[in-house]
Image 1 (cartoon, one colour):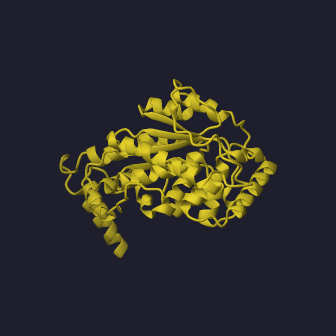
Image 2 (spheres, helix red, strand yellow; image 1 turned 135 degrees about the horizontal axis):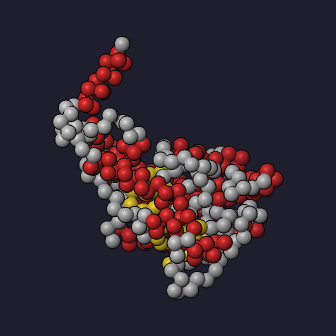
Image 3 (cartoon, helix red, strand yellow; image 1 turned 180 degrees about the horizontal axis):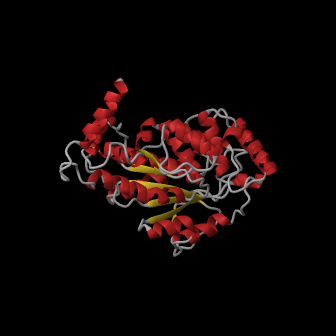
Length: 359
């Protein structure tokens, strides 16, 4: 059994006070679009008219996958551990972005098929040395999967104890779009054709082969029991870590900044365990993977960015962080109409729109 801090439902009625607060600003109502929506969401999570997320750590979980043997990825499997080492040194896009924005960068080995040295900067939470081939058998035992969930929970619990108010999740694992697609197809009741994309450039022949593999995975594990069994059967160690971490983050009242299709697949499993986790999510971007749009629609989330990204590794979420920060600065620090002696500008504009609608 997996336990975590109970998640309190978010009182979104508080949004009325938030919009009243924004309507006093010296900007036309709703003129900042998704930035205002994001700020209101954070304010509702914190039940505060002075929302603050501090500097969220980027938590990147890493693991390998036995389904790699089915030739579902173009990249060599060794890239998982090699790029993990690069990122913790500020390399790659995610490592670079985190360094530039002053974000703590934690890379956790939950299931990498490689042994890192104690001085290489990788946090050792290893449960498995790669999952088994989920197109042939369960990727992990239930006990192994639970340990991954628990590592994610414990990591986030530690971050909350340090005073963090939000977390960015990312992942590193060659072939992990395959379990992500299978989980998404199973939970959203969609066929492989709808949830498997080209990734980083699969040819039409390779794409059809990958869809065939995902179809096989979904058929093999169609009768999976509870969400833990589902993750054990067709998920991955790093996905289980993120799923457990997301549940604890919501329980701690932390905002969860989502990256792409893989992180979101993990959170879909979290939402099966406790639907209240959905209220703590912020969609940083919508990736180029077709399944990601479907995931976000299912979770009723609107992404801040749509740039055709498909890298993963937390890169899109870290990229969106400055926008989230600016959204909160708009909410907190833009001067009011009263401060500028402008009168009730928002009331005048909204009133004019209401009168026009009545005509």
